[in-house]
Image 1 (tube, rainbow, N blue to C red):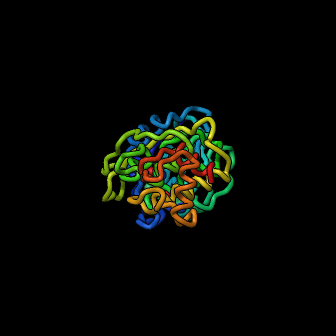
Image 2: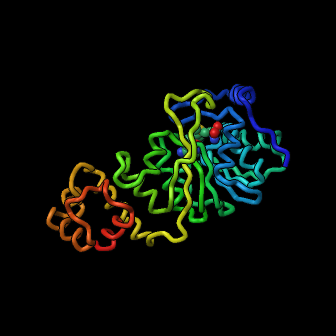
Image 3: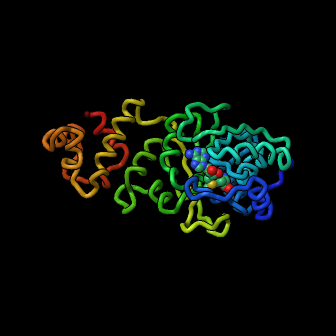
Length: 278
Ligand code: SAM
């Protein structure tokens, strides 16, 4: 398929045409480097015939890279000017590509066409974790993906128990599957240049999730309790959730978990055991 990618000049021309000044509120840092786009698409193993969903296509830099690899694309963009422009950009740069644009807040999306199997996105930094968890929760067709996020957030998502940065997002992400740091990205590939570093994070959904939706909710409540008071032992951290420290101790013992451990020491399977015992 014949596709042209966007470079710095095209990005600036498009922004000027639309009278777009990138906003911090919507995390608008656009990728202006075609090599970075191709690297993300490669790391995400996007292949011909894939159905990919992208959150926040912006001016279309990464979107064009995704369809260049032969995938069809569903793109969810909150900014009306950007959502309206994307089909016009595609008509010029990738006329044969299959594109569906949804103008909506990705956090509110409950249905997607085409049952996408991959998620590829340069996520808006202020909502990266909730939007990622929302998509994994609501769209089981998504089996794998690569997202660009703030470095700190990426390391947290991929962290193992016992690591300093292991927290609620790490444990919740692990409910869905395996996560890894898949590369770093220079600040210079963005316009405007952000004041934080970025990394690529890859994930593969496990063939089977640890349980049904009711169990997931209970597990996530326990994770929130455990990390709400990170420095405290679990018997204390879960006392509000259980009604008392004695009830929390009893629950933890039923689940076979030492009540004097802290949340940061537990893996997802152990959080699931507590939820199962509750
Ligand atoms: N993908 C483009 C790129 O790489 O150049 C833009 C990435 S930019 C970091 C994030 C994009 O997400 C922006 O286009 C922004 O308008 C959009 N966005 C922000 N919040 C959003 C939300 N809640 N739902 C959907 N899109 C959102």
